[in-house]
Image: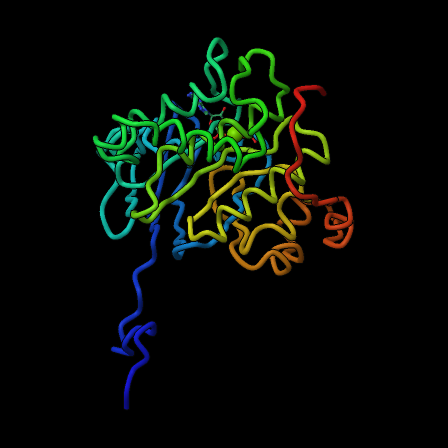
Length: 284
Ligand SMILES: Nc1ncnc2c1ncn2[C@@H]1O[C@H](COP(=O)(O)OP(=O)(O)OP(=O)(O)O)[C@@H](O)[C@H]1O
Ligand SMILES: [Mg+2]
């Protein structure tokens, strides 16, 4: 029987997970920030990592992206070990991140911020850098996050919501279209209004729909339910739940220790007023 060209051959082999995290542990002195965390993420999945303050979410991201060295454990991306590589080397492998507090260059323009990352990335071949394509690519990325009218604006004058979107554009600028990509977003919607949060999460969904594997942290449940394909819950450095959002929302431990016993998924969804990305006017 003929196999369609776009279907994998059924060899009985299970496709390897894009991201594999095994026994990840991190201690800061006597603090066990992460204790034996195991999870796997298939390519293109959009996963929310949630949990109370101090649960270890940012530490987990720092171990995946290379800002922190785990005390124990293994991390594989596309079957290759990441530990031991610098953040820049991990970026070259397609692992990009944003930070809990937006990290942008205030004195530069929106376009310059994105171009700085493009210059360092393998995103463009050397001949692309010699012409205008780098500027075009930076403009495309600014447009993708709704900053097309602010490309020449100084970042110092942007609203916080615009800075968070710029940081997303910068994280995307480090990736290439030809390589599998993992985007780690540490509280992409922190400090944003409800409307801005809905816009940001619509962007995150768009990125995941384009095939990028996304792992993000978030405290606002309207940015988790209806957005994530899957939810991981960390508490005191341990993974206590991993599953579909609706299953995690009914997990007794998650409800009693984090979401609250009166948590309603429907109420979280109702808070969301997802709208398309609008023109950013720099106010508010
Ligand atoms: N560089 C560090 N040095 C010492 N302790 C740290 C360091 N970074 C994190 N910790 C501690 O590790 C634990 C996990 O912190 P982490 O920032 O990963 O939590 P989090 O889940 O991201 O919290 P939040 O939701 O508040 O951002 C906390 O007890 C924190 O105080
Ligand atoms: Mg954090």
